[in-house]
Image (tube, rainbow, N blue to C red):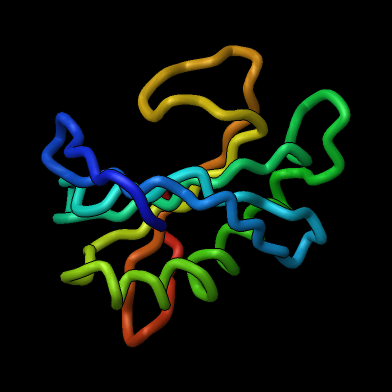
Length: 131
């Protein structure tokens, strides 16, 4: 994750993705879009890892929510945690999102498929939390 680090309206930083593809348990390759770092959340600071995942698309996609949910836990545990330690103070919450297309953060797209999961960090593990 390199390049400019703009500050969001919420006071956090945006770390652009580097086009890195990550293979996840469902077999789809997801691409890191960006990380929103130190964004205030309901329980303190949060880190949002946003990924493009074209295979979750409603039309033509091959990955359903159940498989995508397992992918998001895997991404939290095997991708996000190791990067959090290099970015700064640990957030209270990690949010992993998958979208079938590039959507600017905070904008709606009725045609898009998006999945989100939130996790708290506990003893080096991602623990799922209901939104």
